[in-house]
Length: 78
Image 1 (cartoon, rainbow, N blue to C red):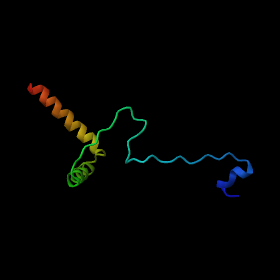
Image 2: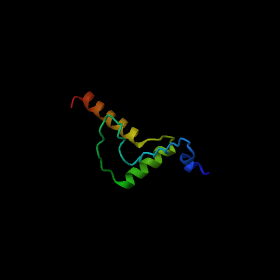
Image 3: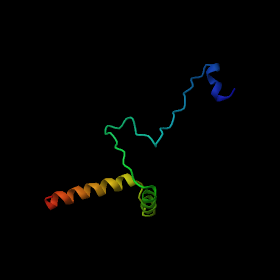
Image 4: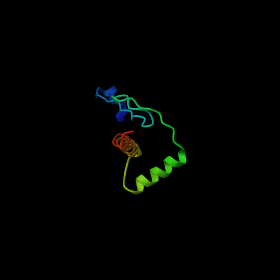
């Protein structure tokens, strides 16, 4: 009898877990996400460079750049 019909023979059968859609926010995340609009060609060019340099996340790069910008503004007294 095929494994998927194991419940008919009294076997316990676990349902396969569905994979989370990575294009949507993680429902378990504590921090809300913000939508940011960036031109596709810019984002794709950045992604190619990040990938070429061995990086994995454009999001981390954006966070680092924005954090650095904020620190520079605070240091400049603006």
